[in-house]
Length: 254
Image (tube, rainbow, N blue to C red):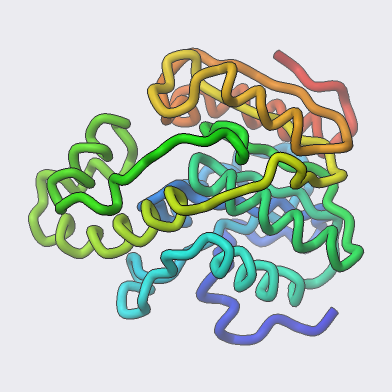
């Protein structure tokens, strides 16, 4: 593969260099999320893994760029960026909106003949599970109320007017991208899928998270953790153990 271009460094953030890496883990943030959400991951993993956290345009140091409000377009761009990375066995991890992005990126890699070692989808219902959601059509207050309801890391901006105003364009674009995303029931990947969900997630009932099983022709497992939509923040040690087992080839752990 060709060497990454300079602009691709805007998308791919590495918080720990691993020249000894034998695999790559790409982490896709939730709506309104940023790459630093995954900053602890490369320091917690025991495995020799090149951890890449994705920074979408329109936030933090990419605030001057227009956010992408079409999930298919976002997946196309990310596939283009990631396929230019030095070749390593590839695992994808996405939370909430990031789960749908990771699924679509995996589909694009497999369509070109590049295998994906595993797909971890967190806090997101199966992609063909229909639900009418129109948060992106509401005013600023509707978007902020949704963020607060989910108690996500982005809610930290709610008490800071300047940060709030800066975050809203990316939040609205992300919500439009994920709420207008459509997936056919027959759309699948051949890599194994591991679905992760919180037992009190208002966005992702356990039964709907299990619908991911119908979108892989490989193996499927599901892990249910205590917590709401952002169970990752409290259950991270267990999720890190799950990832370490994946990279070592060991069986999944509860």
